[in-house]
Amino acid sequence: MAATTPSGAEGARRLHAYWTKDPRGLAKWADKDDPWTELYHHLSKFLSPELAKRTAAQWFHDVFHFYPGSDLNRVMHGHKPRGKVVGPG
Image (cartoon, rainbow, N blue to C red; front, side, top):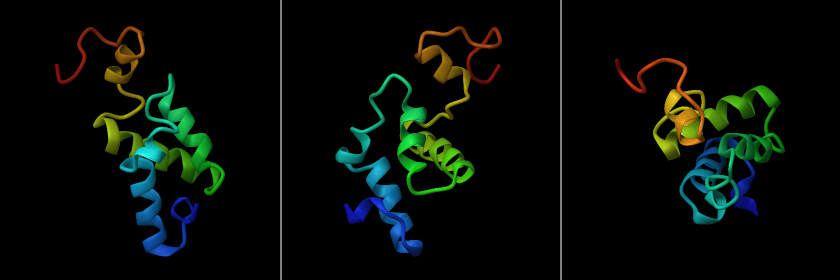
């Protein structure tokens, strides 16, 4: 479990790799109904709530290549986009 706890720059790199590249870390959140929330809850065990939110959003983007608040994410989860066009209009 050492790879999941942060400790300096090297620990942060290991933590990022575990949650964004390692199949064991990805299995805990990436295929869930609400992946950002799942990741946030895992990270909030190690980070302050605000840092966990920012980190979860960035790592969500690192994995899916769009942000959790984007229209693309809304559409992928069965919701309507906020505007008339998804993506650059």
